[in-house]
Image (cartoon, rainbow, N blue to C red):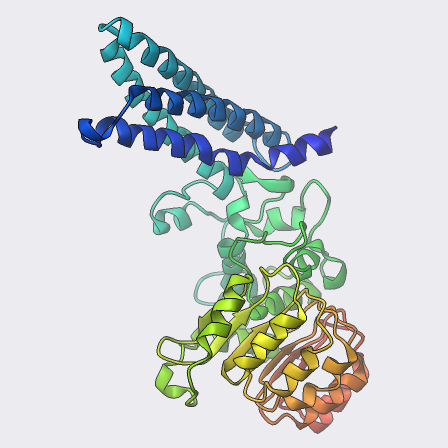
Length: 447
């Protein structure tokens, strides 16, 4: 029954928009529309009846959702009781609307209650936003960031920072702390300080120093985006490949709180991240010339859920992501073939790739970055990696790629980095790459 109730409660974020929309529309109807446009007063009464009913339904679903793990009692209570007040005022508004026509003295009470109702709506929404996104979410960004504090004194001074303070903690603050801090402890886990992070949550430790493969923190980051347990959740700002590499490296090397950046700056993972943080977005003039993509194919792919944006404004090069596509179909591949010469970056992670995807690979000779994490790759895809002549970055984490599949990569002159965590690639490939192509970093996550 608890699982059913939890599932039903998940409809709260959907239903809560009904009373918000209805009462905001009613407020505009009552106070901003000219009298001659309002029509029958009964329409407004219908809005009040529907709005009050949806308010109660939203409150009930919110209560069911609050029974799930991850919310502190104090925050839930404030949001709950403001929602109760809002629901009560909404029913009182229905009553006053009926009475004001019979008793003119009720008209003043009707208008006063309407303003109180809208005030309660704003207050309830504010605390709901705080509950969902963390304290200070609706404040200015600087105030919000200042609200996220370390739980203890700095582990190292600012002039000679540790890897944790200078690199790991900022990633956690930006991508994780909104849901894992003092005022919102989802899963019983706080990530706003080293000691809290190492303590773990209700399910136990999330960081096992020296064992990244079995650390829940890393495992959740590497799950497919569509997986309910993937962290950060779908719809939130995700970690970049470089940030995931940093977290994996840090845990694999012992999750040390005091090791200094200057002591490990020679490490490829750290050096790559420092380089990325210093890089600026390229200008269109610095990119190779390319024709504009087929607009019809682009619109058709967008209609299917593909995220498509220019690499930089003014350029025909495209960054394409299929993370929000339910299923990658052969028809999608045909549309991608129409714009293959303009694909700079392609992300099809988590998908089962159609057999004809190998034909697309042969057309991506100018593509620089490809993300195949957790994808099911037909043999026709794996044996065509050598066709990606301009490729600089490849992620095959969680795939069934083998050592043999990586041999063609040795011929790719532009290739710089290959991620192969949890794949069938072994240390033998690392030795081959280090001997024949030392300029390529093959990262297997500490295998």
